[in-house]
Image 1 (cartoon, helix red, strand yellow):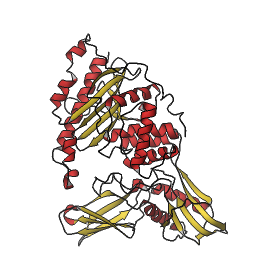
Image 2 (image 1 turned 180 degrees about the vertical axis):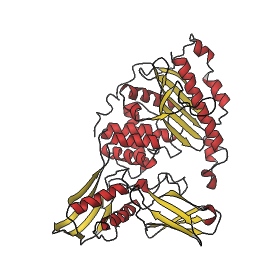
Image 3 (image 1 turned 120 degrees about the horizontal axis):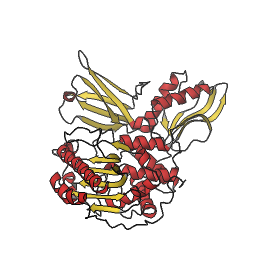
Image 4 (image 1 turned 90 degrees about the vertical axis):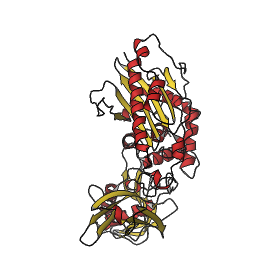
Length: 482
């Protein structure tokens, strides 16, 4: 465990946390107040927001900032800090092929184990590299079993149980995960019926899989159904929803067996025949024949913050919790460990997160606490360099490349929940840290069944919430810029 990545977190703030208003400023008097902007936005629910001087931590103004609200994927910014401090920016995940037996004249007399190291970015290309290394190590035959192990992390069937079965952003989580634990489903209309494929494709390979299977049925709704039988994911899809053709990624519920089947196919391409993959509960003890290292953690986190990949957040969060010695059996238990860290190290006494990704709607965070953390992270140049550039819009509704405000932030979106937190550079070399949470939890509570995927009114609500976020940023830029 390394704390060098985020030094000085335990130091208390040196400035008052009370908002500091500047009524003498002409712009402060002429710019619409926060309450006016919030009312004009017409967004139902509750708004909590705060802005601070990013260089000093001085709180400038806030509204409802002491109210705990769902942060959605803004949670990933905190997860990134947690992982960076615990593991360090140069940490790499390792996936290995381990020989449990003796290798003689190209024959492994014993078992071969695909051992997961918790790499959230492992893909089919990576398994192909392991297969190449296996051949280069001189292996031609394996007499024993082919085992797969992902026990470095607890096995989690779904990140959030309230999401639809077919949501690709809500897969299983394991210490051995492939292609973000998603399988590629593609369909094409033929002369008599549809041609369907299920594969673990990458930009170089398209190995077919049988651990996930699809059947087309004659119905209108539901579009998808799912059940698991004898270790196989069985899907059905409504014929009426398919059209002429298309593709989508579906979540995998047997991640270790999925990776094992793809590894077996790629090994066969090198003339190495492996038996059907079986799961093992014990960490393999033997000689390492092949190793694949991930990119550095900092690069992984930059991709996570850009694309908001939930499984990456959960895996790096749980890996950090394990490194800190926390005992847990599920995502919520690991999130509790992160909550304790946030309270003790960052002063976020009211952080109450149920996961590391923000997918769970029961998470709560205060804008006031997050802004203080962001300003401290900015002074240490920890988070801002890996945040995504957020493009603001002009009066015509289109992205304005020349907008005077430059924003690096993390977005967060659930139905009737919208968050944005990060940094804004305003004219006059002003650097601000901000957090904006908007949530109508009553509207979310009313979502049932099919409404959870495309609820009426959610798109308009979200559009208005994002417009409010930009209005607040423009106010702060005008008031606290030069």
